Image 1: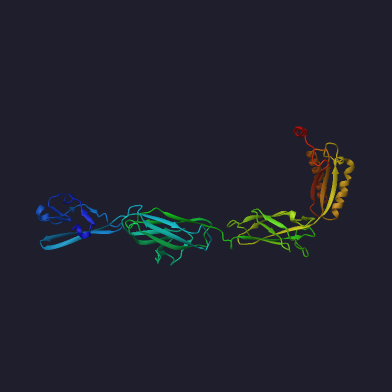
Image 2 (image 1 turned 90 degrees about the horizontal axis):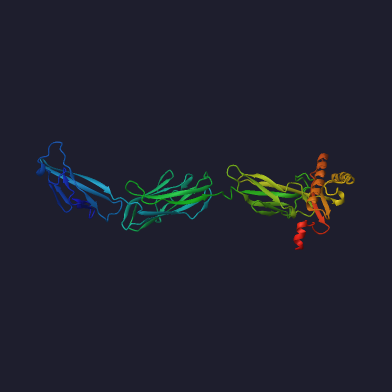
Length: 433
């Protein structure tokens, strides 16, 4: 009796019933199928088989995931007894019957932070769906916060297996939806980068997917509190010019320092500076960090006794210290002109060469900056540059040979009697036009 499976659950397909391969002996009345074996084949022999076969269709209004049970009964009269057997089937959920979306309001997270997720499941069918399951897979290193899950606002703990969360036995009316919210924690050992959380709905029958996979991505970034490197330091008056701050050497206020990223700091009244979170070094191996002093902001007459750009190795969570030294330098000026050199060359006339020895002796007296000043007239610019370079090279070589007490800084400047370098012939012609 197919009606026993439930109203509208099964409907017999006409002409499909056979008894041991033949339609003889089978009577069908609506959804009631009766087969009389003895009337057709005679008494049932020992170990013989009665094979009644037919086809039925599932009702169109059955909810996906519904279990339908059909029972068959056999009776005999020698001796009078009966027996029955049943088989159950479930209504499949078609692929795409559910849509799943997964979102998180956070794009960037740090280690130890709690990340909220929202999963929405919607039945796109007009009919009901029963017994579906939602499987959520989260990345290694993340951890589910027990007790945080809610199904439509009601606590609903999932089954946890490794990095998989499962909510089973979900039922939907036609067009209905469910919302699941949960919290995951970012583990302390998680590396930086993007991490994807995935969710998908499965059918009650066979666990086959009935929705596309939904994803939500977060990016783990350095923690500004623990991973950044602060830069501290001082700009000091290096009175003895040794490049290190000694007792009694005070700081220089109002000096500007700049990083390669454009961050700037100004020293306080004691010459100190501090740049918060100046760099986030590479994880595991650190990074080089460069800091440059703007020498235009030094007090008048001061010159650096340390390099203008310093580079230090930065490690996550540790501060880096820089020290810049500057001191007042005596400026010794050497005036040059065309008459000092052989005509048209960069060679100094013999009568002027002894003056370089006098210059070196003067430079030895105290820390100084040498300024080469050239008074030019009709010489061309390349010749002036060559002459200045030749004089500077000769002085540097002689100073190095003396093995003197400090590093000599040589500055150059050119003054033109006519206000500017003479123009080339082609430039004069263009000017005449």
